[in-house]
Amino acid sequence: MTTTAVRRTETAVAEAAPAKPPRRGRRLGWERRRAAVLMVAPAVILLTWWIGIPTIASLVLAFTHYDVLAGTISWAGLGNFRDIFADPIWNRSIWHTVVYTFFTVPVAMAIAVAIAVLLNSKLRGRAWYRAAYFLPHITATVAIALVWMWMFEPNIGLFNAVLGQVGIQGPAWLSDPAWAMPAVIVVSVWKGIGLKMLIYLAALQSIPPELYEAADVDGATPRRKFFAITLPLLRPATFFVFIVSLIDSFQVFEQVYVLTPDGGPANATTVMTLEIYRSAFGKFDMSRACAQSMVLFVFLLVLTVISRRLTGKDSDAEL
Image (cartoon, rainbow, N blue to C red; front, top):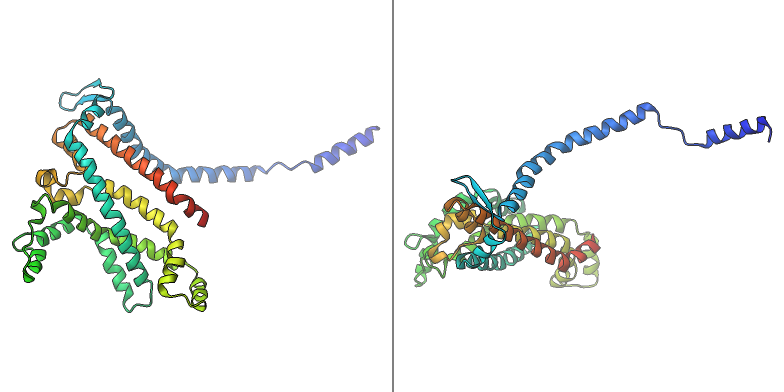
């Protein structure tokens, strides 16, 4: 091969090779990455400071004996976990939390679906109804609990006054161990309907109307359309609402603390979060409180994974 041919070959290879990006383009890419990092940094710092570090600290303290007043700390291993599961009040608080969740989550979800379907129809003044149902969600829980305390009052309360009109002697709702938890559940269901209704309403409005038109052509009844079209297409929203409601119900605290101070009569409404609060700020036993918090975290993690396996696959397939 001659020198001229070699030069021609090198020139052709150089022309065929991809050109290096100009320095201005590389600089612009670096500036964009830097801008992205700067925008994400505040959220990362806040999550690390307020969630990451406390979570790690709680995990470490759960395996220690930490005396807040004396400022001493020693290794305890699994001692804190053995102590809490040997405590009948803690075991009872787990059962109360499960009962509260079992009655609160499905009932509120069913009512929210029914209300969302009604408010998605051509109803006069539906914007006002939507606002009215959502209002309890944005109202302070303490204020709501105080109003319900008056309604549950055995002598001058609204519920017993209504029951008295039909000849029924109303119970001492919040002072009776048999009625304290049902009263708390009623308040929680009423307060939690608004957000669930809003999520279901958004999901309903995303369903193509052509499906209902085709069902009308086939002569489907409203009941048939609800169970054959609406409910199946609400599965992704149902999964999201269920997970959020599950986590929220296991973390219930304010309404229990205000409606039934100190866990109600005979610890009838003592839930896990209330018992954690007692351990941390009543007994100043931070190690015990951290161990209880880890148990609560494991409960939520396991329930979330189970729920994901049961309903998540169908939701992902439809998405």
